[in-house]
Image 1: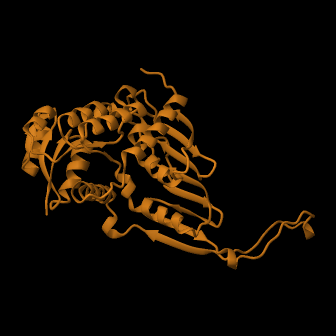
Image 2: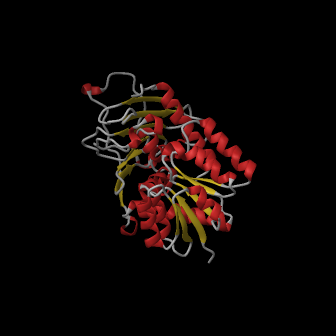
Image 3: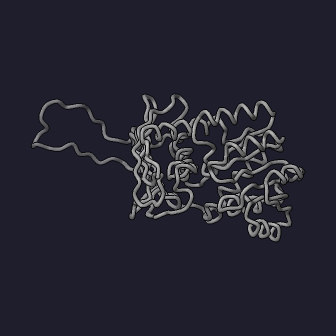
Length: 351
């Protein structure tokens, strides 16, 4: 089986702990051929662990050649310029999220890919999360009826003081964590229309000048309302997903999901009554609920391993076998349009 020779730019949490690690789970598909980072100790660690070539400058790594795909895991504010540079130097590139800060930047990347003939991919690995796949499967089955609202919460309580809290470096919860729930949300919202966006953002526990509390509503005429929270000041997170629908509902975390529903054919016949109900009664009925539950399989219980390996399997199938990628740049462009709208509605002062 042909292996893809990968070069990784940036050996931070994402570059090393996610990208290098995910590819190392698929030794039949990927060879970690080269890495580049400004910090020499990180390069030396990768060289020792993976037998790859190490570089202090990514341009030297690209000049050395011998790569099939280059992973751009640089800090967020460098994603666009470095990705353009990689394509101009003749390489297909996988860029980490967030792909960009603005739609016009995404368009420049799309144009550069067309100009150079290079392929551009975006690392949105949460599309492959087992819990999201299960939620999407249940909704698509139709058992819940028409979906009215979906609530997605990527919440927790945390104080943060690193570079990802700074606006100038494309920090903040919306650009750091937001691409994960947003990518999922837009898949469930559907493609019949672009969502209308309402967003409130706040700075609560952060030591930087970017937001760490986000409340985001996506809505449209023919799509479910989607309520997204990405907050670092939620001390009691209770769910990841809640689904409100006309014949039932769903609630669950990344490990466990419960859902219940009824069949219209089995439900009591009812009709509108305009007159006062006898004995001042309240509308009550016994619905024939069916209840089901799901637990993440043991084989998929390590979320980061599962979604990283699944993404890289899909990337391999796209690059080598000609499969259409599950995550497309056009889909990510739609996500960045939402993020840009949120920032327009919430201009934050800079420190």
